[in-house]
Image (cartoon, rainbow, N blue to C red):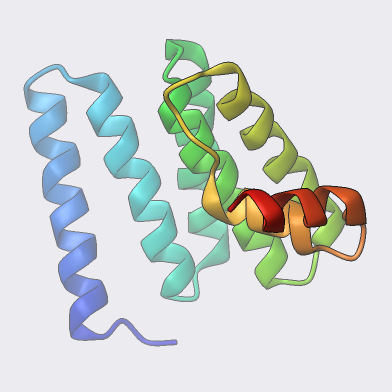
Length: 135
């Protein structure tokens, strides 16, 4: 997959955001931008770079206590595993994202993680029915 104009713009934007955040000493925002560059790398067909950037961003958010960042990157990594049909690994990341979100009252449910957990072949049918009747 080649980098089209839209992807190049996202890559440049997040690179610029990361640079500005570093200049301002905003490590959390630099980490977030770096993680988003991991998503761009995945979309550009560079899974090795994506794994390095997202993995590093996840570890940084864990070290700094950035719960929102952890949820975001756990969900993105899980989605990446799902894209390459590694559903068992994906489920582990989604479950970790949901567990963090459940403990953080204002975070809400990570959409893709919740969707995967509800509709995967391993999902509990009672949980699916409860979700459908309450939403």
